[in-house]
Every structure is written in C-alpha cells, then in structure tokens.
Amino acid sequence: MKPELQDYEPVRAAPNRRQRSPALADSWQRGRSRPNAIAAVRLQGLSSANLADEMTQLLTTDSTVKAEKPYAKSGHGLSFAGLFFFTFLVYFRPYELFPSLSWMSKGALVAALATLAVFVPTQLALENRLTAKPREVKLGFLLLVTGILSVPFALEPARALQSFIEFCKVILMFIVMVNVLRTEKRLRALILLVLFASCVLSMAALTDYLRGHLALEGRRIAGLIGGLFSNPNDLALHLVTMIPISLVFMISSRGLLKKTVYLCCSLLLMAGLVATFSRGGFLGFMCVAAFMVWKLARRNRVIFGGLALAIMLSTIALAPSAYRSRISTTSDDSAIARTDDLKRSILIAARHPLLGVGMDNYILYSNSNKATHNAYTQVASEMGLGALIIYLAFLLTPLSRLRKVEHATRVGKRNPPLHYLAIGLQASLVGYMVVSFFASVAYQWYVYYLVAYAFCLHRLLTVDGLDGAAKTKPA
Image 1 (cartoon, rainbow, N blue to C red):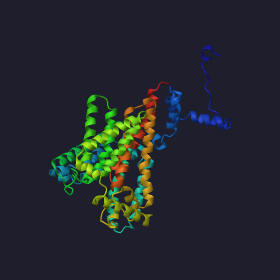
Image 2: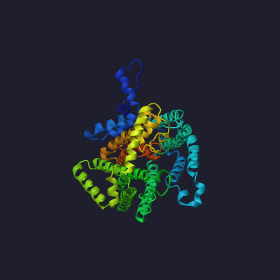
Image 3: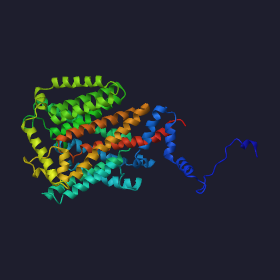
Image 4: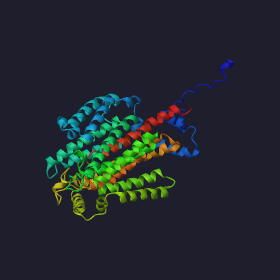
C-alpha cells in the first residue's frame, strides 16, 4: 500500500505447464533464449530494408559454431605456435635452401607430432571433445574412410597405404587448423606467413627465368624448393590461390605504405605465375580475375570488366613471346599426354566405381606411366565415385560459408576487412577448382589450408560477430 512502490511493475512468475497455452509456452521459451536476446540487440536500429537480410543471416548461423564456449577462443596458444612453425617448414623447407640444416629434413613431421601432442589434451580440456564437427571435418573423415577402404583392393597395396598415411597427416593438421584458428589475428598471421613464402617463391621463379636457369627439359623453370613447389604447374596453382588474397589485403588495408606493399606483392605473384609458363595457371588466373571483378564491381561490372580485360590483354602482349606461344598451344606432346590420361582416368573410374584402384595406384594403369593430372579424376579413379562426391562437397561447403560472411558484412558495412577477405578466399577456391583440373593435387595441402581459412572466417562472424554486436550496439 506504500505510494512510492506503486509505479513499479509487479514481477510476473512463469506460468506453470498446465496454465500455458501452446503460443504462450513458445513465447516464454523464446524469451529465455540467449541467441534471441542477442538477435534482438543486433536488430535494433536497423532499417526495414536490412532487417530481412539480418534475420536470414541469424537463422542460418551454424549451430556447431554457435555453441562454442567463450573461454575457448583464447585457448590453443601453444598449439597455434606449433601450427605456425609447421607451416613455415612445409612452405620454406629450409633444409633444402641451406645444406647445413639437413638435420631438419624430418622437421615438419616432428613439428606435426609435437603440435598434435599439445593440441589433443588442450582441446579435451577446453571443449571435452577431440574436435569441432563442422561439415568440412566430417567430409575430411569420409575421405579418409574411402582412402583406407581402397587399400586392400589396390594393385600395389603398399603404395596405396603409403599414400594414405601421407593423406592422414594432411587431414589431421587440417583438423588442428579448424580448431586452433579462432581469432582474426591468428588467421591473418598464418595467411601472411604463406603470402611471404609465396613472394619468395615468385622472386626465385622470376630470377631463374631471367637468368635462363631452365631446369625442366630446358624450357621451364623448376621451383626453388622441392615438395609442393618443385613442379612449375603446382607452383602456378599455389600462386593463383594467393593472388586474390594479396589483392583484397591491398583493398582493405589502411595507409599508403601498406597498400603499396600489398600491390607489389600482387604484381610479384603475377610475374611469378608468368614465369611458370603454366597453361592451367593462366586459365585459373583468368577465372579469378573475372570472379573478382564480378564481386567487387557490383554497379559498373561492364566498365570494370572491360578495363580488367584490357589490362590482361596488354599484359599478355608484354609477356615473353615464348609464354604467348605456350598458352596458345594445345597440341604439343604435353597436352596430348594429359588428354590421354584424362580419358584413361575416366575409363578407370567407370570400371572401378565403388572403391577405385587404390590411392596413388592410377599411375600403374596409365598408358604413359604418369599421374592423372586432374584432381577430380584422381579421386574418382583411385578412391571411387563416392569419394568424388565427398571431395566436391568439401570444395563447395566453404564457398557457401564465405557467401554468408560476404553478405552479412556487406549489410551495414560491418568489418570491411572480413568482407573483402571473404571475397578473396572465394576467388582462391575458384582458382583452385579450375587449376586443379590440370593437376593431381587432391591429397596435397593447397585446398585444405584454404578451407580452414574459410571456416575460421565464418566462425569469426557467427561467434564474435554476435557477441560484438551485443556489446557495441545501444540497447
């Protein structure tokens, strides 16, 4: 009965189950939901034009990422250090550059084992499970299953088993990346390390070409180091995937100095791509350029597309005559051999549709004792048509995630660096899918790093984006 207490609204108790109508029960449950509370904060102040877009993004948020614990974000610091050092060894291979470091020839394997030894207990302590389970991880495990099932039916099981063991290393480190890359700083640090390595490789390729060091049949350069980049076609594939990332870093960076550095990196990567004399690399770069123009020039695509085409044509005109001759030639011995292996691998895949002929065993069926030179028929012929479907889903899933990131960051111009990086990674995946049509790289590291980057970027939006909106938007 006190007057000073009459202005306060009385506290309403939750209705019991007997009193609740279905509509009231549903409303009560939604009101208790934290994600919906965050969504309400996030949608406040938006115009009606953007409201539907934001609601769509909220409803499509990945449930596996949404449940991440807050303290897990800062974990895995030591695991990331191991991953960073492992990536350094994979991309630089210092024991090949400096003979005095030959004792480090097994350094990548030791670094991987040490990283796994730290990662497993840390992951169990943080989340009480060995790994997050997004679709990409599940598809990676399915590829491993199809790979091991193909071993007993291989013409040379020992050869297939060895390839499977190497592929296990790729998938295991991919899982580490998916769980460890949890912050934008870590993501950018790992990408910048790979970008720096790409610039070094491009400089070496350009220098070898200018000096006439043509180690491959006296006509083409060989990579500075072995492993992933000894073959110029594989080096070209990697450069095609890094050029769009360097370009979007240039666009999103602030300051003239940073923009100049990233522009120089982009031009250096393009020059290195030309030095490889890779026809597949040229086709992949053309597709990447068209995709970037389509995404970035949303209003004047015809004008910017024509400008990009003019720049490409002028670049080709200024390129060495030998390069122009190679990219216009489709009837030399190399092209004929690749066409023959493409047809042969399709035939082998049709004859062994269930489990293939075993990992790394197609070469035993080849007419010219060569690999398939095609990542898609490599998977189909060596692990079966089911594995090909899994592999295609593995490539397309990150594209779907990146489109969501691109759309969500475009609304209200939220976080432009993530917006442009999402576009750049989409272009990188498109470039990989084009160039890998001419290279047997399905079991190599290239695409697995890109897919891990894409998942990390999506997690930054779905977890940090929601939390950040709840903290910064006015109530």
